[in-house]
Amino acid sequence: MPWVLPAAVLVLLVGPEESGLPEAHNPTAHDIAVSAAVAILPDPLGSFFESNQAELTEYAGGARRTADSKHGPRDRAEWHYLMLDVGAVGTDWAARHAAAREFPIHRAAARTLFEQHGITAGGKLPWVLKDHHHDLVRAFERGDEQAVLREAGVTLGLAVDAALPFNSTADQDGVQEGHLKWEASGASPEAGRHRTPRQRLQGELLRRFKMRLEYEVRVWPARIGRIDRPTEAAFEVLRESHACLADLLAIDAESVARAGATDAHSFLAASNCYYDRLGKFALPIMESRLEAAALLGAGLVRSAWEAANRPDWPPRQVEPQAESAQPAPSPAVQYIGSRNSLVVHRAGCPHVARIKPENRIVFRTFAEASAAGRIPCKVCKPDAPEPPDKP
Image (cartoon, rainbow, N blue to C red; front, side):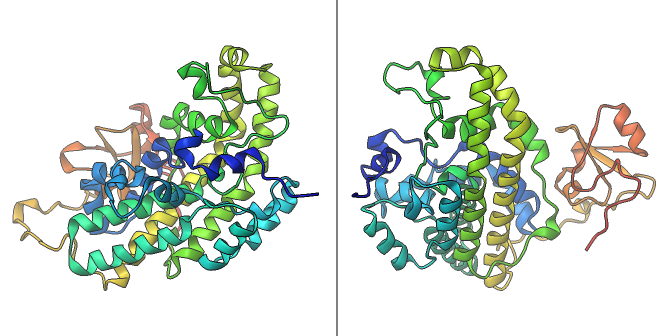
């Protein structure tokens, strides 16, 4: 019996633009993960990228990537995903996860595998990420600030793409037997945002819970590891993403059933019930993926800077003025917040250095901060009896 490509793969053969397949990158995911990555970069990188974060996020989210004239739209679309399970499409999840683990790391071998299955656009994410990481090292070496922003942004964006589960599979819209989907033609714009499991789990779920994720997605700076092999690091994150798919799709199917949705109209009527359940069961999985994205992205940027021998950054330094030096917090000042956030930190938390002096609000006790409506930082845990152990 001849092997037949599923519809999810066939649409990729004509390219995302022609097929209507959603773009791989997700603006909400990039906003959250890039911000978390910048927050854990060591100075001087952290200060530089924080002051240029809007531009950095534009590059990460793809808004400025398309200006690269060396790559056509179809080639750029392949940057954002990799079909790890192409060798086991149509089988059970155990076989698909095994295929993902065994997917070849070398580009030529991957191309051969795709050709064996008749696929012309199987994805290029790990190798494109390696190329941009190399270009980021060279940009640091040249002292080219604009090139560093561009290459760091693209590198961070690709790290986020690798961490999003539906970017790791040949079944990119997530529709299988038992999963709700309706035709795009005739659907309202509102219904279109919820049409497939991918759009619901990787798109609308993150948009609905963005404020919660902005607070929850935090990683301790000491967790950043040195990344000497970007391709292998990207593969590790992609495989972890693929391992989440079975659980996410099971949660989607059960949530649709509990909401009693059978088509676009009934889904919209029960959408709040559906997303409330996703927030309980699926959001923690997506939160962990965004934290993985932040760690991978920050590790890649830092390792590129280290590979360039840690140049002063930005390269054109201004002599510090005596009045610009900020005194260390008074010993009596134990907790610090910002006028622009509800989070309160211990005085020694790395996030305090990011708060401009004029925006700082100090508290002598956590109880005082809590009474003022402040919520504890997840990194330094000011509500804990003792500070967390530092490495």
